[in-house]
Image (tube, rainbow, N blue to C red; front, side, top):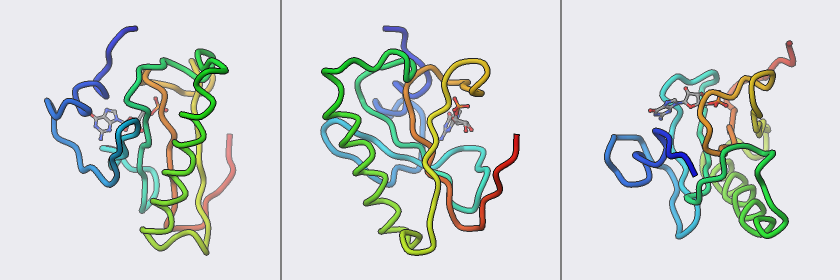
Length: 113
Ligand code: 5GP
């Protein structure tokens, strides 16, 4: 699988503000936040896009969403709410081809396309 800048963040070769880590998941602040809270939650395993998720990854993806839930609670936004987004490929606006979940929060989010 092709490495991206996110592999360098996992290996601490480039800096990032890490907010959560376990054996399989890493979460860090987005460098160009689109909301007051904008965190990327990634599997350490390289999965390029949602299209590449296999049934054998189901537990990993579940853990990733549970990590998002935990981070939202820690950041104090669970009650007011937040948005989880997976962009996929060109029309989805995906720029980094290492699966990631955007956690966006801290204001009332709009729904525009
Ligand atoms: P995508 O458009 O692929 O769904 O989202 C990629 C996200 O990664 C973007 O929101 C972008 O700001 C973020 N990003 C790209 N490069 C870096 C980086 O080097 N460090 C951090 N923390 N975020 C990055």
